Amino acid sequence: MRIALLEDDPEQSAIVALWLKEAGHTCRCFARGRDFTNELARESYDICLVDWQVPDLSGLDVLRWIRQRITDPLPVLFVTARDSEADIVEALTTGADDYLTKPLRRLELLARIGVLVRRHQLAAPLTESFAVMPFHFDLKRRKLTHAEQPIAMTPKDFEVALFLFRNPERLLSRGHLFEAIWGKTVALDTRTVDTHISRVRRKLNLNGSLPEGGCGWRLISIYQHGYRLETAS
Amino acid sequence: MDERTNLSKPVKLTGEVQDDAVQSAVSALLPAFLANRLGELETLQRLAEEQDWERLSEHAHRLSGVGLLYGFAEISRFGIELTQLTERHDRAAALARIQTYALWLRDTIPRG
Image (cartoon, rainbow over all chains, first blue to last red; front, side, top):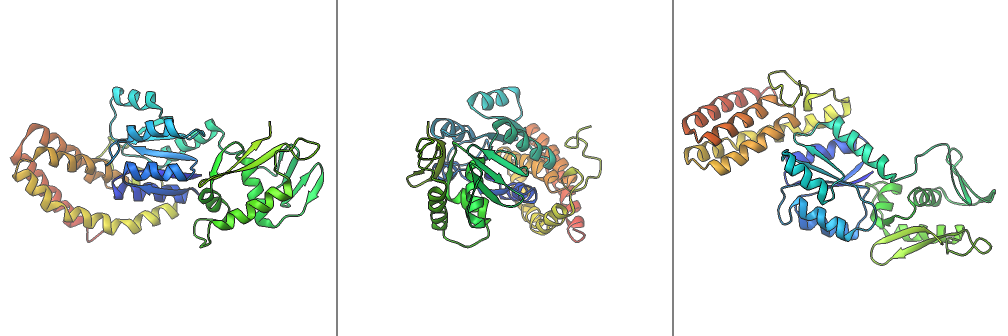
């Protein structure tokens, strides 16, 4: 999962980021509310961890901003030292999906994240094969077929197509695609993503045409943000 | 009893069984974490002497949370107790508690 963390205490964010990384997630840390909302305006994430008391904008202000501005499902886990019933109710009624009080415990945090991911069905689970009509992904052989006809693809194009079809109807930023497919540490221009997206769109005919002319899916570009795969209807 | 409140019990890092990789990675952060604790002792003492209860309470509250996160129940215990002392505006007791914490910290760091 790609996770955005809002926590102004560097010692706490370092530990949480470490836990998340060791659990296989990628995590970006932000110390100020305004920086966090600026990031969410241009990048997509699977889940947000938000502390209540941070500079610029409070966690609650950030939460309100997310619910007003982000149209895609974005689970928010509130993480704070405030533990009164009134505080918890306020965060949940403002739009938090769950609430954890500090000090955090690693396994509980990871379990809560897992629950939110399952609840929101953020990505289709990976099994040996994965079918989204009219496509069939064979994950073992890394082969993609359309109406039982194989589509010739490079390994990276296959990964791009698979990630898109596991996350349909979601706005995915270039950075998100890049991290998920190439890994965060690879030093490549995110425009690399555009090249692969263009090829996948062409090879899979993701232009939104009706079944007789296309596949019933369209891959649209969102200006200055990324891409969304959606059904043609 | 909840690990977060059972502060007398020795805990592993973060109060739970850790994977080796996590344990190792957290260990790498410990020298800087303990150095920060040592570095803030003077501030804690000054705030107590000046009876700046609001700022001292903020420091104490933060320590109560961050201590267990790094595996140090004693730091969390100190943070909780100092928070209580700031609520009572007890200057003498706060200074005494900071002193015992400082002794523990200085004893802990070479072994950390």
